[in-house]
Image (cartoon, rainbow, N blue to C red; front, side, top):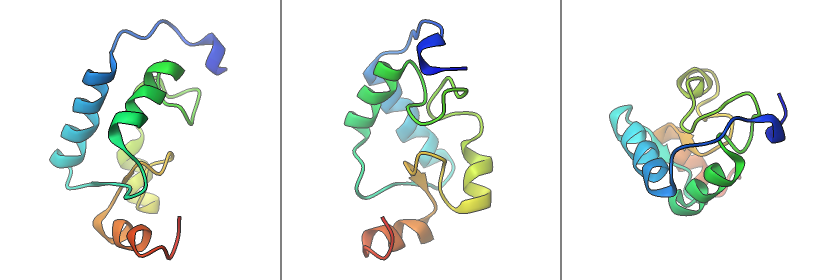
Length: 94
């Protein structure tokens, strides 16, 4: 699937912000220190879903927890474990 082929997106920016924040809180995750939930939600609405992976139609996507289990971050580098957050915050890795 290409980004252009995505179905219409029904969530607005506020709903996306809430979904991301709630998801992070429920799963003990952090938001990447160099990313902003408000601007990220705008990207999600513009992309009609995950702005990083065309096949993923929502954010947070169903695959996020699997990504985080494997790598400590979701595919978009938005959500991360506390350990990864420290690494990002200290500037060891972007």
